[in-house]
Amino acid sequence: MSRAGDVSLGILAAVPCGIGALVSGGMLLAGDDRMLSVSMTLPGAVLLGGVVLSAVPAGVLLDRRARRRHAAERGRAAAQAAADATAQEHANHQRFLARLDHEMKNPITALRATAVTAQADALEESQRQSWATVDAQAAKLSTLVRDLRKLAELETRALEREPVDLEQLLREAIAAIAPQAPDAGNRITLTVTRVPWPVPPLSADLDLISLALDNVLGNAAKYSDSGPIEVRLREQEGWAVIEVADAGRGVPADELSTVFDELARARNARDVSGSGIGLTLVSTVLRRHGGDASIRSAEGQGTVVTMRLPLRS
Image (cartoon, rainbow, N blue to C red; front, top):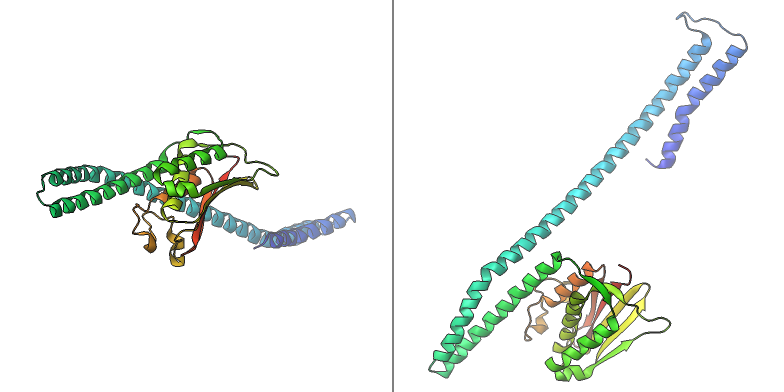
């Protein structure tokens, strides 16, 4: 029931008692002390009747309030149970990733060592190529396990916050792309909006923010063979907003909703090396800073990844 209904019910509960009190008081003042057969004065009987009549709606009101309080308590208990279940699921996931890393590390190391030795001992070129393929696939698996471990660590490690100048950090990240992909490095431009106000330094974990920027810039370089790569930085309503836009192959529309999932790779990107963890890392880093990441993309046209960070933590 609504609060207005409760108020109406409360007034209704008080009316009979009030009327009884007024009538009995008037009778006493008038000197009316007639007795009932129950040996109670008439004013007292009127007052008792008012109290009895008031007790009925008052009891209903108290019952409804108790029911509403119990419902609220059940809601809080259900919400806490859901939060506990989510936390437990997350903890189980972290333990699984840690076990996976532990169990896979030694076999992968042994496999790669065997492949390297077999390549050196192979007498035929076809054998060397076969073992080179084995080594390359083992290296890919090793990278995947390493990235999964890194993701697990990101979820739990304490943030080491310090003042971070995003413009300077972006310039450093762009400069780091050039040696890895000279062609892409030459196509990257940085635009910083300073009017009517610049983006102030923010409190953040420098290493983690650098990791997120490197992943997004690296994706733009890998998946765009030509065309500009534009990096934009601006302040918007208390947020630092970074956009990385490219004119690359884009993401199919039916796969956009999963690009931030672990191991997700678009079907038109499987010819390019990668583990499918990069955007998950980006999303995790931003979420831990109170921010978020989003993507807009059209297959065959390009992609825009938007990262938002709160200017006040």
